[in-house]
Amino acid sequence: MNLNQKIKECLAICPQTKEFIIGKNAFDKIPEVLAERYEGNKNVLIIGDSITMQIAGDRISDICKKAGFNVDAYIFVKTDKEDWDYIHEIQAAIEKNSSIPVIVGAGYLNDIVKVAAFEAKTKYVCIPTVASVDGYCSSGAAIKTNGSKNTYNCWAPYVVVAEPEVLAGAPKFLTAAGYGDLAAKVPAGAEWMIADLFGTEPIHEAAWNCFFDILPELLGNPKGVAEGDGEAVQNIFAGLALSGISMQVCNDTRPASCAEHLFSHVLDMTHHTFNGRPQLHGDQVSIGTLTMCAVFDEILKYDFTKIDVDKCVAAWPSLEEVQKDAIDTYADFPIKNLGYEMMTRKYESADKVRKELENLKVVWPEFKKKLEAQLWSFDKMKEHFDLCGAPTDPSRIGITRAYLKHILPKAAQMRWRINAFDLLKRCGIYEEVVEKIFGKGGAWDLAEEKLK
Image (cartoon, rainbow, N blue to C red; front, side):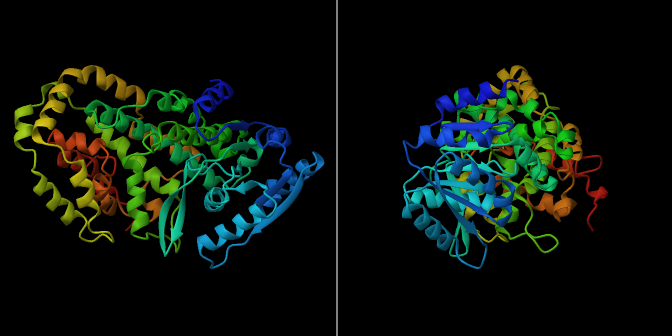
């Protein structure tokens, strides 16, 4: 795997992120990049908190000052202010001297600065301090407004500069969460293949080639991730960043997530906490990822060349039946009409389903090979999670296997896009597969419950 060559190829087609430098002493290149990309602007605003400034911000400040830049700093302190209060403060600090915003940090702070830079109508530089999420290079930020967190469309970073030593020095549990978020692309990619087969969301070849072809190598050293090996952690961050670039290339989140992320969304939207705090996004996604690996393990056991298309089509529910089921499924959910709206949008006629199933019968032998090349088994994924420190049982994020089974239908219905559950439902085996996963000997055998 030639990572630098892959990054170069992706940047060539990326609409917003134009520099991505990762490697030993990468921060030394920041002045040169700023001079080239920001057309003579010598004013730099470094934004970080007390921890990230010590980790990398102070060093970057010194590097830029020695290169002749005028450097100011905004030290972020979390209080009870609203997100938009922080955004407007940072926006004002950027606009004061028309400074180049340089965010040193991760997650929440990165999102705040991303929006502040967008509001200031300037492009920003991202210096990540932990390989924990795939949102660094996405064209959006999670911002809380009136108590509700929503995605705010804004620019992705113009420049990303990362040092493996900095990333590897982050708390190991955060990097393990990042590993889980990257591993989620394994079943997510397979679900995109299903959507492509059904004709609802064709695979965007350029976006796919941003990282899916090297995904196994990026995930290939989970033990090294746990041990803080610089190269192993570098590969995780690179994969997370490239998935964000992939989203930019196709202007869609399809490359980065599917049903495995929806389990996490259900937990977030029901304000799930464990030990008094919300769980990490990557940890929740890890459980969703294992669940979808178990789903695909079952899918691959079927011979879809032998499905009875007439029987499946005859059993296909009407739109009204699907809507009623969605209403019942979401009856105890904060947004009760969410499933109804999404399933109404997703619904396809019996005639369309017939065509999809007839095609599935014909192409299944070859399509199965493609799925197998993309997928990891439940056991393989669990082994890698064990080695890197990611959760391997729902109890690790504070839910029972029974509760995971309870929220599965919500995850299946939460978004309009095609997922693996839609394949199961078309073939009339959805309930059968769910019972296998949670039944005796299944991946999430309820008799083996670890959290009482």
